[in-house]
Amino acid sequence: MLLALGCSMRIGEILGLTWDCVDISESSTADGTACVLVNKELKRCDKTSLADLQRRGRSDVRFVFPERKQTASSTSLVLKEPKTASSVRKVFLPKRDALAERIARQEQEKALLGEAYQDFNLVLAHEDGRPYEERQIAEKLRSLIHTHNLPPVVFHSLRHNSTSVKLQVSGGNIKAVQGDTGHAQARMVTDLYAHADTEDRRLLAQKVEQSFFQQSKTNSASNSTDELVYCLDDL
Image 1 (tube, rainbow, N blue to C red):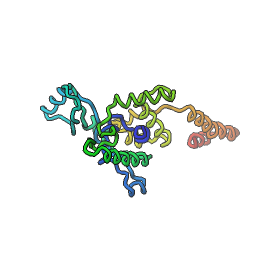
Image 2 (image 1 turned 30 degrees about the vertical axis):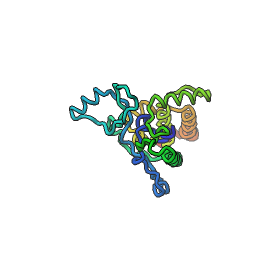
Image 3 (image 1 turned 60 degrees about the horizontal axis):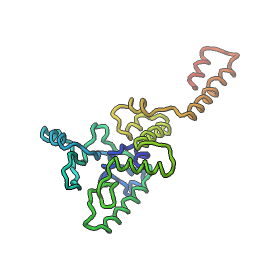
Image 4 (image 1 turned 135 degrees about the vertical axis):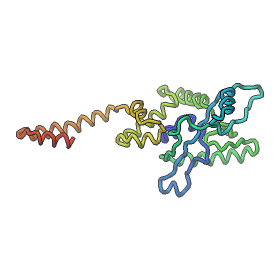
């Protein structure tokens, strides 16, 4: 949840994140450059489609997880490259201590399980190292919502909220936010996420009152074109 809120990452990107793509070293933490590299995603894919792509030399799969069930399955869990080049990006971490705690906990789990731990180098994994899947995270979120009587949301809502908040705190720096979200076009950020907050609109009305109407009233005795332009420039 912190990666979705802080880094605006998609669920597949979070579940596919590996420790070699995380920089939380002492030096990067000290100078504020701690970051994650988003360059793959975890996804369950149809085996026939994967085989067809591989046969045509168009496969973007980096790793296929071993199957746990004895019975044959029509799908495989894989780590694959993102769909678009813009999705490959570096995102600076606003909250680093959670990942430091996570890696420490994993080391304890590895020591406890020994050879039984399946080490895929995943940041988020079960206690035995196995990858989480999107449906499992969705179930955990539903359970959390039910337990604490929270408003019903889906996991993608966290990324949506993250993007909207970043637009607000950055003063509308669309390109900076787009760099975090990995959208191919800035228009996607403005069309989908740039929702005007009620409080922001109230403050905007106050600024218009102070910057334009109050000045216009003060200068009403000399209502020239130059003064009107001055008020507009100030606004």
